[in-house]
Image (tube, rainbow, N blue to C red; front, side):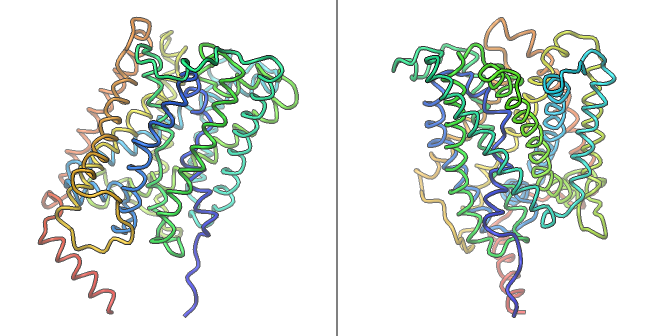
Length: 479
């Protein structure tokens, strides 16, 4: 029998880096200051490790195209699966929209042509990015290896280059900030610092996307755990190096959270050829990042629609490619409508458009993962006989603690992102709070409407259903 063809392990690792590592989030984390290093290490230990290892077990024990949504459905039932599917999906249009708002300003800096004074030109550029990404999502993932591999290489190159330039700049001009040991300790009195912690956790999200590509892998039971562990270690090192370069060259209170490393780069090298080249490469990484996320987001939305947990329109597949083209088109339409809020003449919206949209994307993505942890514990309880090629390393009370801590961190990160932690944040966060509640309400409405297509509500696996499923899978393997 011929060996199964599929994605190489290099492509899988590249996908992890392309999906999880996002250049635009490095500078907001660096804006925390030197204490970022404490929080990176702390959250790697308390969040990334338990989250990544839980995903590795779920991804190898439960082979499903629905990924995290299917795990939540098996553990907690349709109600929570529908909510998680909606949160997972809606974060994506907000994310595309936030990145689209970067293009007019960065292109203005690069080419020296004013593209920002006319809102119609701004929208045209943003919509062009949106729909190019949308059409890129029509291609099967196995045909897009060059996007995944190329995007990962460029991302790493840009991050490492900025880190190196930062260290060089600091060696010539001295460190921009106080580098005494006390500045590396956490300062919980800083409201802004607490708010930026959600960005660090956000930077760890996305490992489950590779689980939706299991059918395209040569050996998913081997490759998924290896990719989680090796990819997580590589990403953490890249973030820390890039953050150190930015933080060493620029005082934390001068790091721009909207345009991130691009502003940092211009501060260090000016607006010359190097700045222009790196800026263009940065924009290219945004295409690759959104394209790689689209494979997971669209597949999950289509799967949720097929189980009655999202509207039917999301579940329509392209008969030739097998891709969820309808979900991609809906993403493009919703993103376009979100971008049109810039036509509203409100200063709080126009001035902080990137952070408002990016913050909403962060919140909805983090909300998706909160029910995954109790679902994991429930599946361990009701389905103990399932073969687990990779098992979470802790058991009993230690396992519960290890999973409870990252769940609490997710809740805290959501609160820190949307709730004003100082008087200065109120004006900026009010539009975000309004947007959050509006889209939460829309999600509940869609959940209720979608449920009408189901004959009955699935309550989650029971020991009896788990045993029945195992028997059916064993019979299928014999055939």
